[in-house]
Image (cartoon, rainbow, N blue to C red; front, side, top):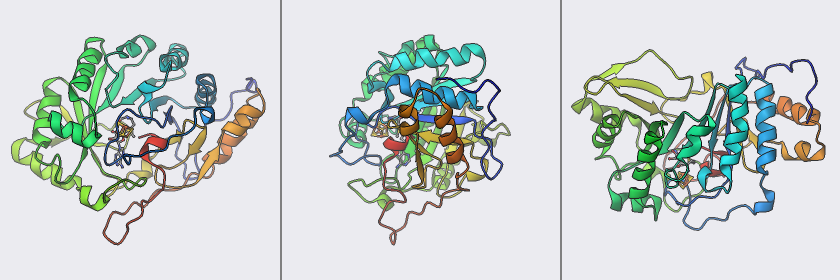
Length: 338
Ligand code: SAM
Ligand code: SF4
């Protein structure tokens, strides 16, 4: 597990973008089947293919040694992975040492009431995905999710001191009558909310084009009810934020289709099998599991990470229209980690 004694160089991609953010999908499994994310009948990876929690820690730590300042644990549904709190606990040593700025989590919230203890492992902020506040529609979009459990999870997380941000995918004909209500609800509980355009990732049972709604439509709708003010601050992520004058809360817009955010991309994504994707919207990937398992020395792992980052593409080119029926990439968001 040794790294050479000198500080290893920071990771910078061929376009001069420092790679400081690692997203880790710790499982491809999920207790929901959101209609824009998965098909109903999913085939998940055999458990033996997954990196162990110790191996995930080792890869994350190699990235931290190379300048990663933020790690987001995601999935699939990260909180359904057994013993996942162990990974939070072990990674929190990098927060304590100051090497890592932030350890965060994206979750569907279904298990959050049981896992609000993440706050004791250095997690400060959690993104909870919630596309509707109507229990029947929630069941429909997740195929069998229970809204009351998610709301209880949000309550428990906030009571434990976690800062919550809500993520909502804008879906044509589904939640386009609820955007104002979602903003009011989130801001009423001191949570920011970010809307996301649906992206063409993986085969689903329906047609993406029927789900797709440009966020310009969301903004127009919100502007009828609220005063939206530009905010200068950026979080370094893909969301562009506006402030709602009436509530003081923020609304983010993630628009990979209508405005791509690749020029400032600082992230790479690790799957639960140790495959590193340099871009959410491209097929190119690097296998980190083989060098990880070949030896307990990290030299080969570091070499594989460097070679991968040297191939990071400039950006993606997602398209959703009637002439493009295939997804931009075959894998689901739950594999690469949203
Ligand atoms: N299960 C967790 C959750 O739902 O928050 C974490 C993983 S999920 C893949 C992460 C985020 O990706 C969620 O906010 C989800 O709504 C979003 N997502 C999934 N598939 C998407 C797609 N095709 N286009 C846009 N967002 C998507
Ligand atoms: Fe599961 Fe998250 Fe995908 Fe929904 S969006 S199916 S909760 S991984």
